[in-house]
Image (cartoon, rainbow, N blue to C red; front, side, top):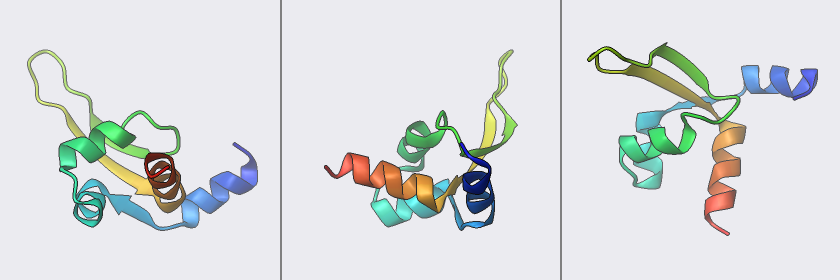
Length: 74
């Protein structure tokens, strides 16, 4: 990723999992699975482990959401 792309991603609108789930009529679990491992998605929290529930918050840049949407609607 170039320096310009990082700045663009930083300043662009970011979506919560709940917002995309509502917009796309998917469950929050489905949206989380779609975006959790993609580069550029902001991940905050802990992944879990040792019997603890994962607590992970995602913020998905608009450009990444649009790319995934385009890929899924081909």
